[in-house]
Length: 248
Length: 69
Image 1 (cartoon, helix red, strand yellow):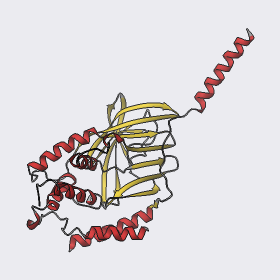
Image 2 (image 1 turned 90 degrees about the vertical axis):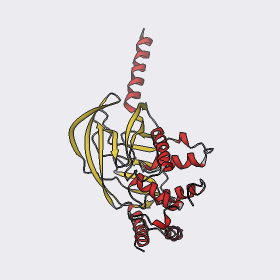
Image 3 (image 1 turned 60 degrees about the vertical axis):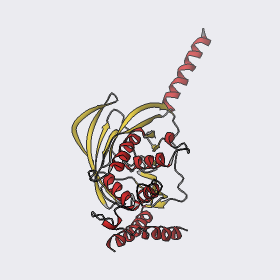
Image 4 (image 1 turned 90 degrees about the horizontal axis):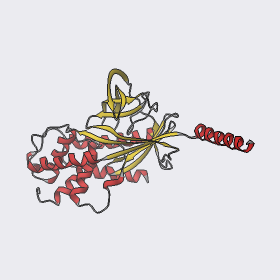
């Protein structure tokens, strides 16, 4: 009898310690629900119209995956479309589809340390940058909607994009019942997981969420990372040259 | 190494001989670069540092299709 009590006691101790020391983490999939053309499409010929009709289909097939704990997260495009045996048309359609979001290639965030590391392609070269998290000056609104059964609340924000030298507006629907201050790409800083983000070129919405115990979060090697200042200098140099070309 | 790359990239950018304003140069309307430029502007509203790499890739692709010069 004593042995049975002991075994039961041991079982509860093990169960409690598992619950205490395990870390709640999530694997969230986002899809492009609404790609948007930002320029005049009326001047496009038939070839162009056909091309973008297909690019829209490719965009809607893109899946972005965010793995996150309370402390850190990793975001990137799922590799399903890159098989290596695509035709030149498929390759350029895939690249065009990615331009709707213009997300970074990979993003790693240390949420509590306010530090973000990302890989960004500029002029067909990938750069790794390590900097403070972006600030979005979020304003939380009253509007609410349902995303995958979760109550989501609207927030609007803005940020300065150094690469395009423009202030950009962003709308985000965050989920207060999942209190992790993270979202797709660089978007974060709200009191809940971002379930949908509306940027200039697309609306990107959570299509699946799985709660997983002790999920491993990938990191980005920072041994060759540029600092924010170094990246800004690079952009200034590129943009100066770019503007010279435009003027001449 | 970083400087070498920057110089290479600036050279790469300098090969873009068409201004990225709103008006398409009539002489270049039928070149693959002009077509690609029009497509990128339709999609993204403008040519900028973020999409110039894609513009070049799209130009390369269009050159293989025969729909432009």
